[in-house]
Image (tube, rainbow, N blue to C red; front, side):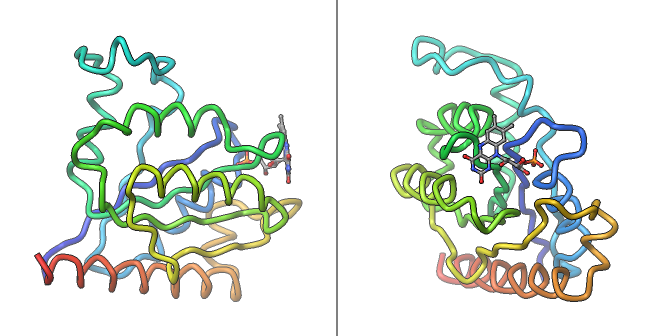
Length: 181
Ligand SMILES: Cc1cc2nc3c(=O)[nH]c(=O)nc-3n(C[C@H](O)[C@H](O)[C@H](O)COP(=O)(O)O)c2cc1C
């Protein structure tokens, strides 16, 4: 089977972020023919400015290249004051005019099931950007307040199963999309 590449975006810059940790755990749990890449430059992106949208900005080009090379996006974003983080919104704003973005399959991982506002906002933003949200691949896992790190998440009996199932669904949706093209 052809390899599939998915891109992970975390909306948190914290060193011990649950959202970053869950994405790293997911990269260990995806099906064998899937490569999960991590975009490390979220904190280096300049603040979005439409006047600079067409300009060559190395950090933005790196994000857009990573999106271009990927078959799907996995997004994990904390809730800040009932919204998505500025870090995530800023990255998404740089992708609004990106012609590779519309129809891209997207899965959300919510590390705090109480964070309903941020998830709703994320869904609204990505729907407006014409992303293809794969509902069966979106999952909420209760990590907030736990002492689980990347390794602990990947080994946790129930949480790892939820993530594996979600990633199977994501993979299936991506394969179906490829076959339909
Ligand atoms: C500035 C700030 C605002 C927050 N606002 C909310 C909120 O409105 N709702 C909520 O459920 N959690 C809120 N939290 C808690 C974070 O969502 C939570 O700590 C989350 O785990 C942070 O994600 P991270 O571990 O990936 O950095 C807030 C945290 C911070 C720092």
